[in-house]
Length: 465
Image 1: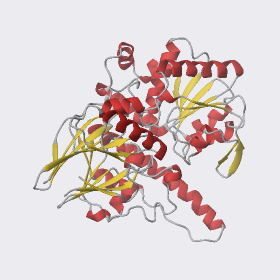
Image 2: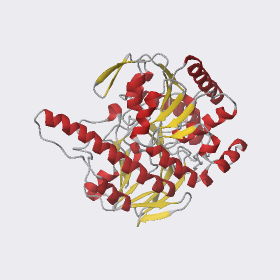
Image 3: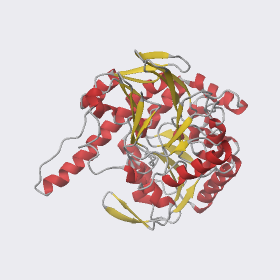
Image 4: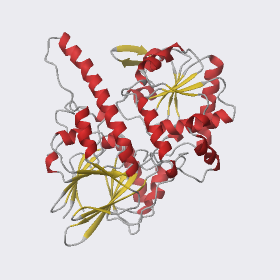
């Protein structure tokens, strides 16, 4: 009989990792890094609670690192099977992994300088660019809608999840000889207000459903309200001479922001603001988005014009700052600049440098457009922190902090329920990828409205199909 062991994103939002075991095979569904308070002290010393060499195959739902970022270390620790992802995710992962390895190398260089000054032994990064290349060689892309036999008793199919380009709902068929059982993993389901992507595809049959619950306790504000607040932030910054900082994920959120800022530009609502994408990874990801524009939502008549023009024609005030020198030069802008930089939760990347230089200015506006996990700097700022520690310095938070929920790439509570309603008959449901309060709220609503069997696993729990 098949079973699932929950190794990550169980009553947590990051670090998705689920081990599926049949009589013959072991399949790892997701292999993500932990972020914020989910992160363990021995994250890289004891990264896995299983033997990587015993895994026959890995299935990844999408390119965000909290779902895929530990694959290079899995390969280094002995995994030698195939990693399956959607075709577009296959195209995005080289960008994600090489950027992550470079940041990791920089982090360890800083760490080793501190150890050297303290007279202590230096340490090696957990994996290198060479390990990334080995991991990339293991990845195979599968088109949406195509059923693939990945192991003698295991079939897989990806469906469009509408979260980021290439994101997938995963359908897995497991045959143990007695009968075939179907497991569906929602992955991260998209917000149906997203401007670029289609709504998540419906799935109707499953014996078990692993359902994300990031926003299981609330809905997003109406999109038009969020856009109006965004306009007001821009106009306030323009009139007061302030700078706007937007922490954003390089995959998905940055491209959505280019679309919305282009919309505001054509409405005449950007004023004299210039827009800077200060993320080499986001620039490369935007190129991939252009290459796969056939997957974009074609129903929006405003967007058809955008697709024919390209990013920079749609938003003429857009500038890419790829080099470190160009990024540093943005500090000379005291006003008239909208700077979009990673990471989206302020856990690293260039946004930290911009926050360090600008958080203490009262005219600065910081706009959060995505989920901020517990324990991250982004979450602390959203919760009203008066001080922020950045690269060893304590920075006073005088900037104005804004949260624009409708820009989230995750489905809200109503959208999660509406997507789940398509399953007939009722599957057994395990809620994943959410904080405990959000999970309990979603569990309560599913129980009341659908009368389904819903459980909330903890890390280490084992559930049989």
